[in-house]
Every structure is written in C-alpha cells, then in structure tokens.
Length: 401
Image (tube, rainbow, N blue to C red):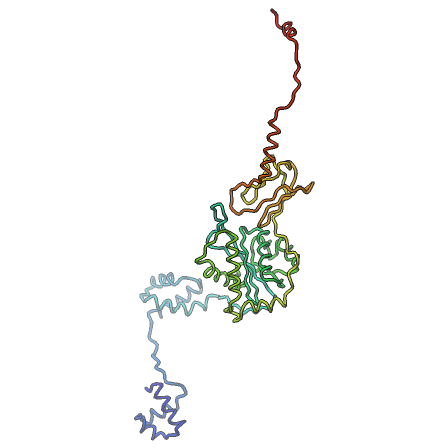
C-alpha cells in the first residue's frame, strides 16, 4: 500500500510534470496498476483496521436500557450491574462507551451567546471572602462584597458590607454605582433574600431604590447563575487573584485594597471583549445617564424609647444615649460610619457614635457618663427635712412612774 507521500508524488508527476504512466513507473519502480490506482484515488490513502469485537458488545443493549432509566447513573454502578451479568472487561472501554452514548439519553442545557448594548445591564451579586475580616478590638468578622459589573464594558466594582440586610445591600449598590460613575438601564440581581420578595417580584426596599434611581430591575430565575455569567467569572478571578497572599489591617484597609485591585483589573484587556475595560467604560458612560445628586438612602432607621439604663443596642453592641432623654422617644439612624439618635419631640441630639463592626462591646460617650454621675449625685444629696421638737413632759405623762 502506498503511503501518503508516495501517493502525492505520483499525482504531482502526472499533473504538474505531465509525465506518462510508463515514465512514472520507470521513475518510481511501482507497477502500472499501483500507479493507476493512485491517480484514480481522490483522497490520501489511509490504513483502516477492521473493527474488532469487544467484550462489551454483548452488554451494550443492557447499558442503553440502564441509561434510558437513569441517564446520570454513574459508570462505577453500571459496571457493577453488568459484571453481575458476566462482563469481565476493563474499565476504560466501558467509560469510553458511556462517554459516547450518555448524551443520547441525558438532556443537556444549551446556551446562546449574549451581546450587551452600552449601558443596558449592570449585574449585581454577593461575593463571600474566604477569610474573616479584621474589625478591631482583636476580633474578625465574616464579610460580604457587593459586586457589580457592566455587561458591555465589563467594568468591575465592589463594596464590603457585613450583613445581607437591605440597607447594607443598598449601600453596596450605591458605592458600586459611584465607582462606575453612571446609571444603567436595568439592575440585575439573583434571588437574594433582601432583594427578592417571591414570585420574581422585588422587595419594597429594592423597588424603592430602583424607583429613586429611575432604573429597571431584573430578578433572575432560581438556580440560574449562567444568566450573570460575566460576574460569576469575575468572582472566580477574585478568588484566585485578589484574595491569595493579602493581609488586611481592618475593614477600611480591605475596601482600599479592593478598590485598587478593581482599578487595575479595569485597566487591562478583557479576555472576552478583547478591549481595554476602561476605554469601553468611557464609551459606555457617554450612553448612560449621570448619577443623581442624592443616591437612595441606605441607613438603618428605627425608633425606640430611651430606657432607664440609657443605652441602645445595634449589631450586638451597646451605645450610650443622653440620660436626660430617659423615657422619651428617639429616632436612630445607623450608617456604615456612625450612629445618630435624635429626640422626636424636640430634635435634640441624643447620641452620636462612630459605628464599630466588632461585637459584644459597650461604648459610652464621656458627656453621657458625666451627666449620669451628676444625676446620681443629686439623688444621693441629703434633703432639708423639718422635724417636730416635743417637750419631755409629754413623754412623762405617757409613761407611768
């Protein structure tokens, strides 16, 4: 049998050099029939070994029946079942056969390629760092990063929070929008508890946020991470590129390093778009609406009556209140940086503290402590009391001699 090189040489002699079959036979030493077969053959010669019978052949029908009942039946279990019927072949030929026939019975999901218009979608999600974040007072705490990525430019931003409550998620969204610098048409979230109210509908907090920003929302179907696949890939990149080899002094240092890392990522050429992220972001901002002067409120707000022991509890910490406000109702507003309490009836400031993310701590304002001591001193001061003075003769008359 001619090999591919000799077959190509014979065809070249005939078609290019214009040699006769007799001359080709003389030059190559092949007989006439071999040369004629080479010229008649359209494709290069291939050695095709006839299929050999396999030990698996008698069991293929049974394997197909098993896969029809359960397409995800593991190969190890399939082997156990057919060995009970007499199969004594190897594992490799069974695995190769299962790899070929399993897709015939298993319904696989297919995906379409998604293209984004500039400013169309902004994907949000929560990324959970593997390590706990130092928060001072010798403590660490589990944190979450609200991440955001624009579909067109793939610009990335993130904000560290310490809960999944709506005010903290809205704070993270506000910070990401501020880093990206413009408003998209639609905000995309999965079914996070503070975002999704059930049935694909948003919670009042999330709907109110979108209403203030004048943007649309899209809540994804359950168990559908591919719908925000761009951000999921960025999470994997954060896991392998941002987290390893880093140390953080506190939550502020974590946020600072995260912002710098996102800036470096946005300055690179994106693997999917083949373009510099920051350049596409500049073009995308031109098609997006500017941010409003005031972003949606993200403070925790509640009302309480100042107790006799004037402290309020938030996030497992106690913060002092003005003891002069005892018994009165105050409105408390908690941001990511401070805690403020104001009397509802007079508007007087009842407390202002820096918010701490460490837990099981008590913080007392020196002015509140001084006022407590003053009030305690007034209660202990002896009062002037008029005492009646009776003559001793009166007692003599009452006590017989």
